[in-house]
Image (cartoon, rainbow, N blue to C red):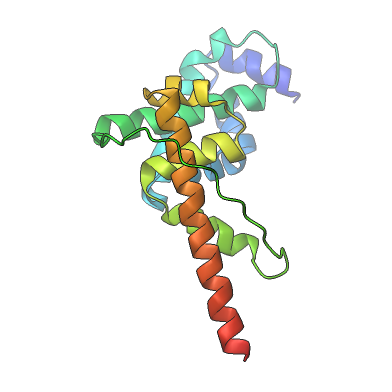
Length: 180
């Protein structure tokens, strides 16, 4: 069955079509949930909630743009809304840090290591970093989604980059010391 047919059946609340849609896209949306969740369990919960929202809002999908992109946007919003309800954001001074220049020997740092240290960032920094760097949101969009100012978004991104730069440099220094 084509995606367009599946979408039409989901709009009619066909449970088998909803199940098929879930099976087709859960493996693509779960990594999105992981990026915006504090734990694996929370990511699983966010995925379930995202699909409930997708099934509820699917009549609003007008076949314009990527359906997968539409679902991804809902998934990100669900994860961030749940986070906002659970956490009171700390107020962070909006000083504008200069973005660090990072030069990385791509052979020296694995993708797994990068994903691991991104996951270790404080929640707010991780979310802003993921939205901006990995998902291509603008600071204005991040500010709207996270209910913060654009200055705070920029500041959080700069701080996240500083933390990541320090962790990468620390790791590279340790591996250099071991090889001596």
